[in-house]
Amino acid sequence: MQRIFFNEVVTRDGFQNEPDFVPTDTKVELIDALSQCGYAKIEVTSFTSAKAIPMLRDAEVVMGRIRRAPGVEYTVLVPNVRGAERALESRADEFNLVMSTSETHNLSNLRMPRERSFAALKDVVALVGGRVPINVSLSACFGCPMEGDVPQAQVLAWADRFADLGVRGLTICDTTGMAHPDQVSRLCEALRARFPQLQLTLHFHNTRGMGLANVMAAVQQGIDRFDGSLGGLGGCPYAPGASGNICTEDAIHMLHAVGHDTGIDLGRLLTVARWLPKVVGHEVPGQVAKAGRTQDLHPEPAYVAELRSQFA
Ligand code: COA
Ligand code: ZN
Image (cartoon, rainbow, N blue to C red; front, side):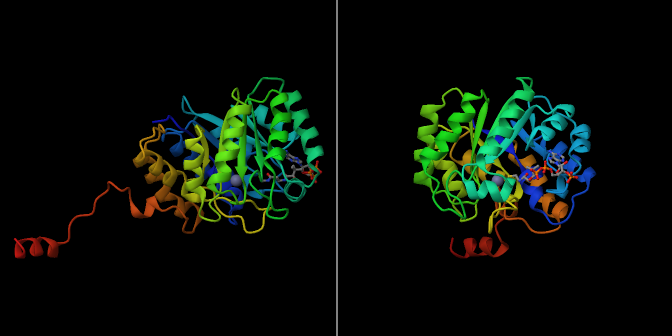
């Protein structure tokens, strides 16, 4: 049995792909409900430009109004120095910086070459000056929807450069659901050997139905941190055809079934998950919220009792 830590990204990765604005009050209510479920981290929002991601234009207000639960870290996405200044004001517990390991994906998502992104993020690290722990999310680590393969050596080289800047953690993202379990095993093994001092988190999307298989492959390599999105919402507005993150409650249900401890109260989490379709105004991909847990048994139909006596 392993202790596994979850970071909930629905209000950032999930919401940034939703067409209709979720009111600020609802975001706060949702985050407050998630804070009671046993997460290690919640990625609350993104301090990006309101023009780029209008859904998250209320980042300051949300950060100011949520009730922070002891033991939960409230992390935020920070794209540049301007975002870092805003995040410092909002007293976020961790800054999550982001760039892509694929040049084409970086150009389409962040509108600049990777070297410029790296320089900008290095400026963020310098500005923060150790006041707040920094995590770096590396996108497209298992493949780029425009370039194809992203070699493992390329991922490790970008990881090295951020490790050298003194970051606390790295999140290895399968932004568009291209990873398969063998590839995940190989990369996780290499990362664990190379960065024993770093918090390593895996971020999978279920675009091609391999999300939970990839989680199992990572766990078997000793990875103990994952991003998940309530209901399986999510995607990347700058990656064609990208669909949802792995669904948190489905992943937790699976990890509990095989005997791992996640610290999450699944019953409570399912109550929140069943509210999510109302929040976003449509069905969501998550399955356990619809089917119930394996141990949530159905009453036996009346005719079964009749058959029993008939065959007794
Ligand atoms: N917070 C608020 N406003 C910001 C900002 C921030 N962190 N960064 C830039 N802006 C504003 C600027 O003030 C400027 O506004 P103006 O047009 O009114 O003058 C505008 O955004 C463009 O600024 P610029 O410095 O040219 O930034 P950019 O075009 O290089 O944008 C990003 C860089 C990264 C901020 C922008 O491309 C972005 O947010 N993209 C979305 C990335 C993302 O979150 N993707 C999903 C995560 S995987
Ligand atoms: Zn993602």
